[in-house]
Figure (cartoon, rainbow, N blue to C red):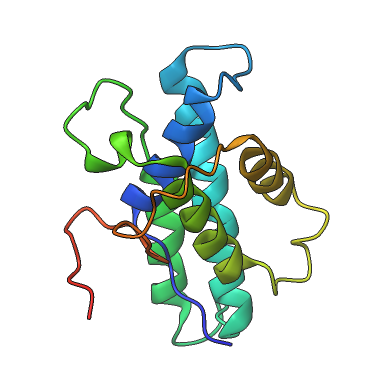
Length: 148
């Protein structure tokens, strides 16, 4: 299997869905969302690094460092109402969860990870409204990608 690093917009969609389900810890929505988003991006970075054997000791270290920088720079903005994924139906969010999981699930630490529990819990709470036909995507990006 191959693996890729998800765009922050994909993580935004998952975090937003989580917050909309009323699943929050102590703290502000911004803090909770930022913490969750960083967790998701770090897990994704670790999975990609594991898949391609990227370490600090080889030429892939810059690529891996870029993934870590993306994760650490992540900020959830609860006030950005202009994002299209805010109106995604449950079926599209469920598909986004599965797209994320597919990129991470081969990592040896996945099964015991907090990130897996997050994804499983969110997937269980999403109402699948079957209105996902035009919104299915393994990857949500800030710039729409044309589907073939």
